[in-house]
Image (cartoon, rainbow, N blue to C red; front, side, top):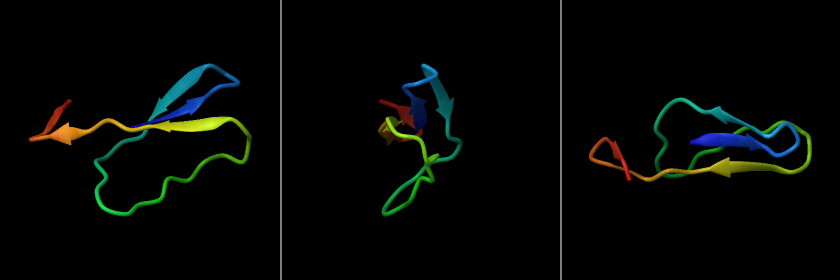
Length: 45
């Protein structure tokens, strides 16, 4: 999972594996995004 900052053109990787319901804290600036990657059997798909 990664946090994308469209102003600075950077991606910050968020550690850990998430499942079910969860919250991701975001900075208060506009134009932020989250990139999700599905994991199956411990491998990124």
